[in-house]
Image (cartoon, rainbow, N blue to C red; front, side, top):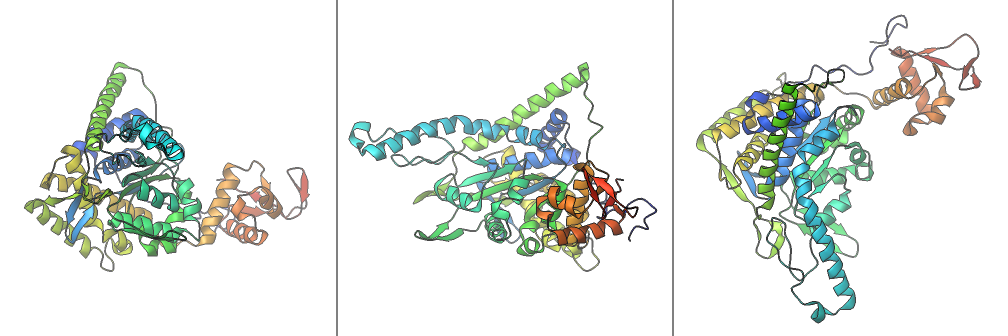
Length: 486
């Protein structure tokens, strides 16, 4: 419904329902660490949840796959956290990933020395003088090949192109995590540009599915990479997320149906500090919980993964089986979700995501099983119940976030322009020329600007100025609009 120009501006986007509450009390072994991160960062609980499951998935995915109702699947999890820039996303990522990054640090230092020595050998060709055992085969969870070029121990990345992903999985660690508190640089980067996004999304989908990666390169030929694993967690801002979630090509490709998404309410204005005895004690308890979480993550990272006999970069993880009662519970959950995908059902408009819900439950439960016991062979009913509880939460979030109807590209662009006018433009008046010079770079076409300004006028965010000349940043304009900042 358009604005009548006498009332408040009409929102361009339909407001989302209130965010789903994380069922923290029902999350068993995850309760303490999620609560610890929220205590230490004052971030929304949902962001802490995403950081925790991502870190566990990175550490666990090389060791096991999981039995599902239709075969086996990797333990890899893909997650998006949608929140404004002040939501403490970086703080959450720093704490959740701390154990992994600290684990990598000394190994990367050793690797740099080994690589320098190897390159020196290659240059000098003097293998006899250096000795054939200088690059030793140390016992660790990271794959290394003696007397050959050392393999980078890096398993965590905050940015990566498609080409970089394939190259690292070909020559580096076979199990990695892409975890970025600035996911917009990936979503808006080279790999997700219009000409590359489907290829990158397909590669990510194949990794989530546990399929081989196949790539043909000029002068090199075909590359087939089997037994690779990848987890993903991107923190992105709402406007970036909206543009991503309304991308028809990506929705049709299927990558979005594989991602666990949260979009919590902002806590701005409520995050007060206290230095009283109780608050200090809570922070100490939180630090202890983070320490115990880190120990469990490191225990998984230190454990040697199973690999193929003829290729130490190809993982051959065992399969976690479902206890009989757990499998029966998963069947019941699957059938319940399936009925809700009928026309008019709760999940009818998110059927792509809902169709993978039972598999996601098994993946989450498998990660919890290895988090509790790195030697686990079975998934218990209790662990599966936690997986179902979390998946019901993610389904509710998906209904809230994705089931909002189609939003046109012009409306999305108009919202971007409105945000720029309200947040980054100081004057009370604007015209096409001003936006063309100073506005968002991708919206500087005069014809495009006129279309967007008409939309903003219709919705009451701009009002045409009909009283002659008006000064805009030191110049006179006859075609100005007054900005209505609500």
